[in-house]
Image (cartoon, rainbow, N blue to C red):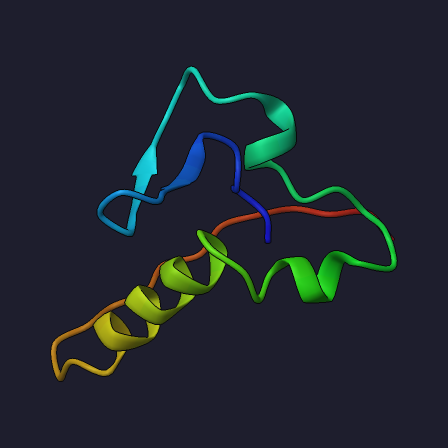
Length: 70
């Protein structure tokens, strides 16, 4: 998941939060054969669930912007 920098999962109340003090290992998904399974764990699955719930609202709008190279 792109944009995972700065997000982490807080166990005590099961919240997905911004945490600038978290170590890089706990907040990033690195390219590997485990990338797909890593995105199915917290905090990433929680973020995706929240996005899906938001997009199902009648007045929801999603803007995307990005670039890439082939």
